[in-house]
Image (cartoon, rainbow, N blue to C red; front, side):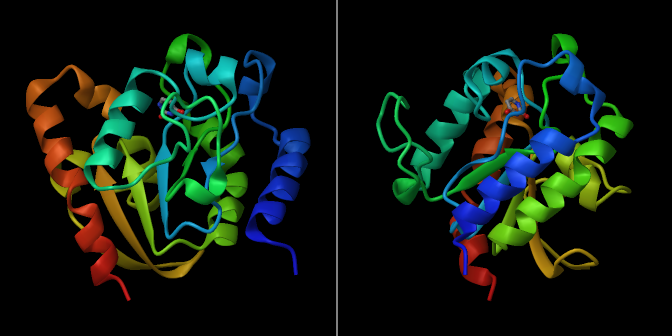
Length: 205
Ligand code: URA
């Protein structure tokens, strides 16, 4: 039986070749999910930005730094070394990915077609990891599973629903760190919501 890490490596190689997303034409590369494949928690962002397109990992810019600070606040990490230069998957408590694997030009919002073209990649990634809790970073990833909801209404609320992809699954929607970074009120709310993660994990059987 292949490890989850090995299965993810195979999945990424397959989709890197076969993904039909048009953003491939303008992006430098596909940005794969990153972190501990055995984690019980997966964070899902929107799409890579400039820094991620260059560096090849999710959340490398200012939003990523803010995310790391919030993770530290709940005694979690996605980096083995403080400067983030080296990754040690065993020491990362979390796994992080995006709904769209390629950078949209000028960091515009990803379009529905782009999300749809990356969807099977994401769903299979989540099936391999099979986390206890999926945390949405922002409305784009939330909309994939809660298309009728508004992030302003459900942020910070633990949602446990039956999904056709994974059966019973727990989700925690949060504001996107990039949106909250320079917005005082939203920033406070995100920090407060983020602290709910350990309790949410305890609650889920
Ligand atoms: N914002 C995202 O949603 N994803 C990244 O990888 C970086 C910034």
